[in-house]
Picture 1 (tube, rainbow, N blue to C red):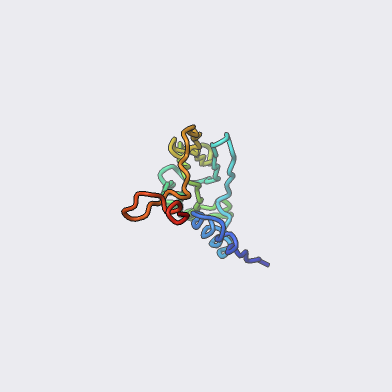
Picture 2: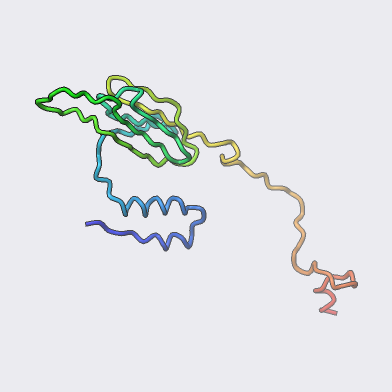
Length: 164
C-alpha cells in the first residue's frame, strides 16, 4: 500500500524548491519495478560519489553515458546477438536505461568498465560565488527613517511640520 504525501504545507515557507517537490511527487507516482541492472551508490568523500553498475556481457561500445543538467542517463544495448542454441541463458543481455537524478553542481569526473562493472565517479563542485561568505558590518551611523520625509517645497521634515 502506497501512501501519498501532501507537500502543500511546505510550499508556504520554502522558496525555490519547486524542482525538489516535483521530483518527490513523481517518485511517489511511478513505482520502479525494474531493478535491472543492479547497482551500488557509494559516498567516497565529503563531496564525492561513485556508482557501480553490473553490466556483464556489455562492451564499452554497447554502453552510453549521458550527463544532462541534474540528470545522469546510463543505457546499454547489445549490438550483435549470438544466435547459438542455449540450454540455459542466465546472463541478461536485454537493453536497459537507468536514470539518476543529480543535485545541483554534481559533475561526472570519470567512468571505466572493468570485469563487467561500470564505475562512474561523481563530484559536487560548488562555484565560489555560491559558497557562503562573511559579510562585514560597517560602523557608520545609520540614518533614522522616522521623520526624514520632507514636505513639498518646505525643506523641513514632515514630522516637525505637523508638530508645529
